[in-house]
Amino acid sequence: GNSVTQMEGPVTLSEEAFLTINCTYTATGYPSLFWYVQYPGEGLQLLLKATKADDKGSNKGFEATYRKETTSFHLEKGSVQVSDSAVYFCALDSGYSTLTFGKGTMLLVSP
Amino acid sequence: KAGVTQTPRYLIKTRGQQVTLSCSPISGHRSVSWYQQTPGQGLQFLFEYFSETQRNKGNFPGRFSGRQFSNSRSEMNVSTLELGDSALYLCASSSETGGRGYTFGSGTRLTVV
Image 1 (cartoon, rainbow over the protein chains, first blue to last red):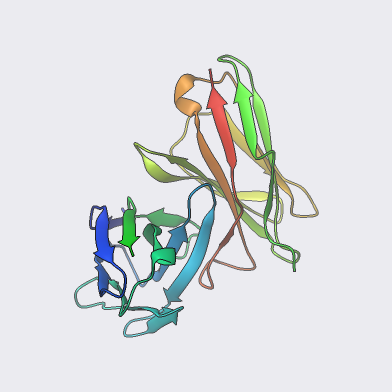
Image 2: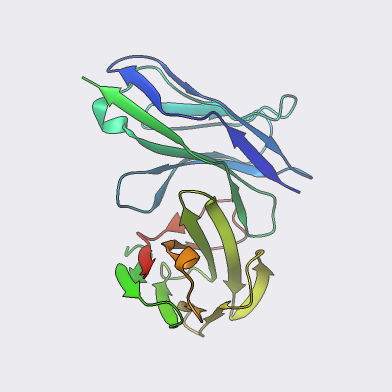
């Protein structure tokens, strides 16, 4: 079956540091890949997506590249802010209208 | 454009009771899916509806059920509540088979006592 593995947190960074959150997946076929973000007490917000190999999704300074050869979709940001503190979820959709999520990675950014 | 609306935001129920949660998707979206989020199990898929038909179902007991109406609004029902059903229930809508991403509501926090 499908599965998503992402690094465990929390990830603790100082403001303006570089962020990487690793995500690897197992899926049949050619899934679409997503990063969602969840702020305390809220639902999930779509951060970025990629639908085919070598696509790069980007939004609000965050980037992730769909790497089929390594089955990865790592999230990066060059300079994090305190307001980026949240839980980040990597997810895939293999085309059956369901999302398979990773366990989530909490990011804590200090001033 | 209004987002995905879930009601109520919070619920407290007693073991053995049943509960109904509601989800109104983004206008024009015909796919509605439901997820359960708990600290231990993370985000787990419950079921997905498209044009009033359940297309996919996750690995949950039959106590969990849902339906979708002709206006795409969806409800999920949990009968004979157990303590372990305490969770955040999230609804998501999409205009087509998810490749363009799903928009989530803020969720319903269910507490079973």
